[in-house]
Amino acid sequence: MLTFQRREALRRLISLTHTASRELKVFAAQNFSHYFKDFPDLEEDVIDSVYDICEDPDAQVTRVSRSCGMTPSHARILGYKAIVSLSAESRKWTRRNTDVLVQLLQSDEPVELKQIQDSLVSHVNLDPAAAIGVLCDHCSLDPDLTAEEKEDREKLRKLVLFFLANTAKKAIVAHFRGPSSEVEQVFRDGLVKAISGADVQETELIVKELLLPLGSYNPRSEHGDELLRSLLDKVKLTYSDLKSKPGPISLAPLHPYLSLLEYVAIVKRAADPGPLLRFYSMALIGKMALQRLDQSSQLNIIQRLADILPVSEEERLKQPNSGASQELNSLRNTVVDACPHILEVSISDVVLTDIRVHNFE
Image 1 (cartoon, helix red, strand yellow):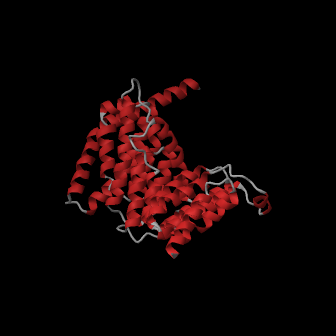
Image 2 (image 1 turned 90 degrees about the horizontal axis):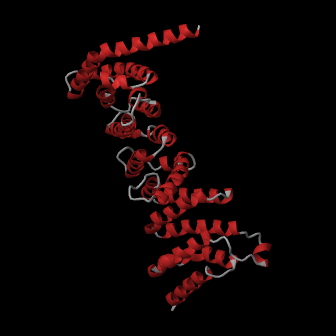
């Protein structure tokens, strides 16, 4: 008999969310968690009812709700809190509830947005791997998305990355238990995957603010090499597009990414510099490749190569007989062989600059 009464009470609470009265909706949101876990067949209805409260802007404002200071925003805020209470009762809803809260990050109401962010942090604390996985999924672009869906995802990605780097960062890091822990792996792999579709500012935030501070990248490990490969793939794709166009090539669109590659492998030493030196040697410093670059790009590549070579030589000397060191030695020889036309380009640039200065004077 008690079970029947509790079931009917839950059904009644669900029905209250379909009324026009805001105070009744709020009453339902505040009491769902008392019955939710006991009736699995009604869980879907309860979840949908709470979502309706979170998204309903037009509930009727009665004299009672006005006297209590209850606004549409207040009702929705209690809905966001109710989502947390339901996830706490049954973790199987964590991923779906996190996904809904992520969509709500687009709110332009500051008080509501604060509660949405707090509710997301609560989900990170309830089920770190699941919640972080959902957050990182929203940072990646699915190739099957329509143009409109892609645009929406790009807007949301900026909000999620900002949330990860600020409001949620402390809570997320608190759940890391080393590079091999599930939570850190989900976070690391999800963000590395997101790099392919991120713009320059987003990529810098991912690399500098979110990934490199992790224990996974200090000391150097295969995770740093994976990060470098992901950045190199992005650079190679952009460079291929630049080469397909007629006329001199400006590498200006690549400069921020080339700087990030150096930051990972040369400044932070979080990755083997070999793949970076290989890219420069095979793609950028050949005679034909250099000649296709505009003057400023030629000088930029030469300057960057001068920064990469000393660190590569240090790595080579650490284990001179290893396969990696032998490859670095081969790449170094490739650079040496390219020096005549590198010098030719450098001298030509200096002469042209002198001529321009002289003519100007």
